[in-house]
Length: 315
Image 1: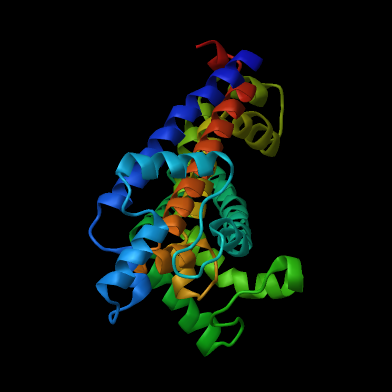
Image 2: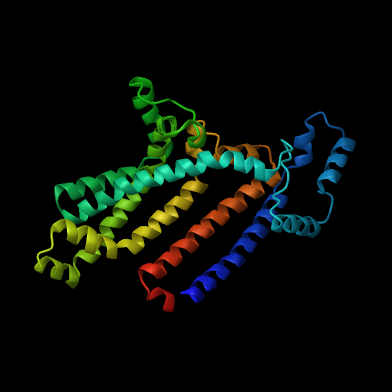
């Protein structure tokens, strides 16, 4: 097991190196001049030249890359061109809203989707099964921003049950203000993942329910609840776990629309602001961190496979 963990961990290193090189070249070769953005429309050529010199933008590309990589290895993501603040500080200030919202949304998705998938498999071919699958198709088909605006119109404006926009930090104001402001964004963000996890749970359960050991459990007099949740769901867990893990990574990296609709000061809003202002260090730091999160979660998923099914570590 230790050898398998070490092998999978080392395999993630070249992935992050390629991501870093790609991000650096993509932003440096794209059109636009960050010095002109910082100086403004009235800047003189001398002012632009001094800003480029101060930022190191006049140096050869490979020198810029090696200097940036060296600072990166020391944990320094650079300084924002627009605010003058450390990129690490900027990301740390925006991290809690994004991570807390993603965790809340994924918990909501799992709590709703897994029972739906199990119920659909148990009642396979029935009206309940068709209704759940129809809801999952709607969850896939309707864009998330449409769902968000419908939720705001119905639950926030018409009924007045929840705030229209804004966010309250769990660490500062406690659980109730956080839940009150995070519920609508979490429902919007989790809709597509509820549909995805429910369909995957149903498919995996249907594969397992036809196995001999399920019939044996029934023959021994095990209750339907015990057969479904103790025997079937446990053995159908590998593909479901993969969907949950990948979905959580995508939530972290894809909350831009949700944070924009509900005016949440998270990493998604920071990404939009950095792209509009061509703030290279912030964009690079955000892409690297989110790519690192994605690689880390995939690594944890692979390691959990080996724990759930020992045959995987020997392949």
